Length: 246
Image (cartoon, rainbow, N blue to C red; front, side, top):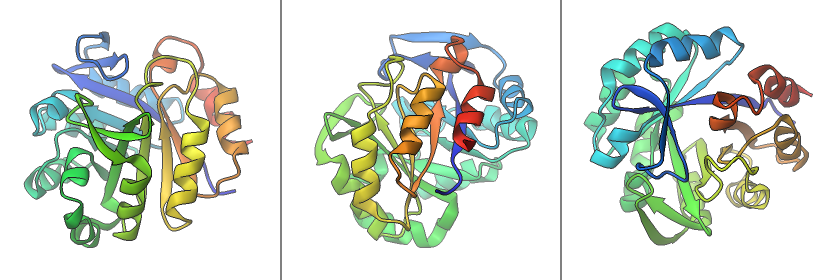
């Protein structure tokens, strides 16, 4: 089994740290008004990566928090991946210029799949594709629209194009604190093959969820994103890190 990374999530809305239930903008809970301090806190607690979502960017279609994200990257001192509203190369370049290690494409990856090979060649390890799905179908535009494209199909297209990292979110489980979609993650790992790593997201609540993800035995299941469970004290980063290394 390869290394398994726990990525604490920081979602940005109006310059604040928030979490949504099932991606709904009207179901936001504010957890803090200093994202840079929160980023530093997770690094201090042992995180080796952070997952940041520019929610305003996702809804607007262009990054809305570049200055905040730059401060977060500087404060954390660890690699940061970030997505939300990256619809053009200029948006990608602006985000990477903030020091972000991995930029996550969502809507654009689905709507312009034919560009993925060129993007993978241009950005390499600095590029990831976020696959947000409900009932197995890809959702876009901040999860406000559900497409007719199966998540597995987009995953296979992205992997074939040379994308090295996929972030798979089951939006029905996100923010619900009921555990992740284990079978969905296993299926996606099998669909893309060993050269493409998959990071699980949505519903991860306890250290036992991490142990169960590890027990799926998928060598390319490389990590898990955890948000609400950490902010609401359902688990601790220390417990999750221990489960990831067990």
